[in-house]
Image (cartoon, rainbow, N blue to C red; front, side, top):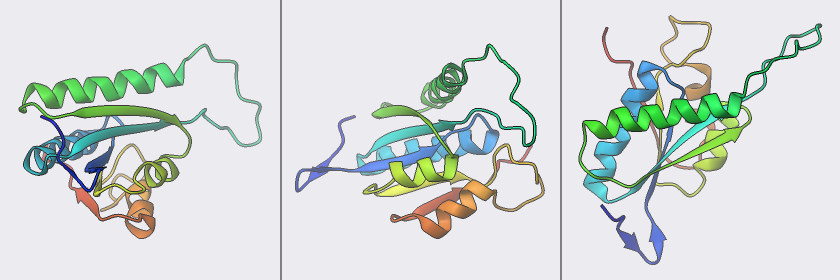
Length: 149
């Protein structure tokens, strides 16, 4: 489905993806919204090298960018298998998730995030990344709750 353009500007919905159930629900919601509005979905995943304070990072033979790419493409494949045609792009960016999402959503119609991802405080109603995005985004933010188990 081609994105509708008004005044030469493409409509975009940016969605944060991290492999969690909440992020998959956010991606599915963004795809449905894009179908209704003719927007392009940009699935964004951020990655960082792990940090251990006070210790030298152990030598690891892990390609974090490749893992992030596999995570976002798997989420897109899962969601698009259940939906109709819609234009979906993906971006894999090194950096802090909240900062990456804010930068990528500049000028977007919507930023969509899950209610919580892989953070340590599982009982939180809204994870730290979503919280930061809600308070600092320059576009409307939609928070999708984690689907019931």
